[in-house]
Image (tube, rainbow, N blue to C red; front, side):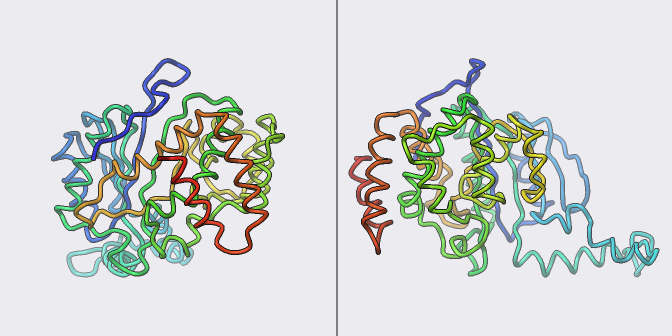
Length: 334
């Protein structure tokens, strides 16, 4: 499957838009993952600790490989010991320290519930096929994804560089995403473990209604205030906080409930499964679903038409809205 081309290839600085993938998986440790990245793309290893390492200077940029849990990556498990002035890195148990033994035990237990993650560097949107090699290598090395275990709510996150940062553009992309969300759930076969997890809670209906109204034309500050009022955490299938942090850092600092946000001019698309254990899955499949959002976002007339239809159908439907709207979406897409 090929990667579809974006309808807008360049950003406001005249540069090719970039895309970064984050892949969550199990059954393949940090050391093996680091070696895999090096074999594919070159680079040198920088080890922050056992649970977080980087492969820097590759032909694509810098990769980060880590256990996706701050308890381990930030060594928070040491704090209870340190409160009693116990420094577990100094205590020896045979040939290993108490810290090493504890890390072994934690990884063996927590590794069944929380994923490892490879965060790829931003790659030009015309070179995404380079990352398909990583997906294939994970499959060949028996990495496990969303469907490998009932509790694996693992995901594939895509960070898409914005074409520009005007509020009208941000609003167009958000509207396009809301209109396509039921279809994205179906076409992406979003796993039940992910649907019931708190990681990709859907946008509230009240917020959908607000945003899809044609007379909703806020300035950036008002948009951020509304966005936070209805979305007080980052667990949405499309997370706009990294982008908003770039544009209004001081305003977002007033919202401690959203946690730590890495500012970047991207749309943080968090909906897709991580299907690394499936032989026929590809990153292009998830990417091409996103491109449908891009295409709609750049068709103002279609957004206006579909928004009116969406809100009308929502008001008239008691049961089965998603299936009815998905059917309408398919008609438009074909």
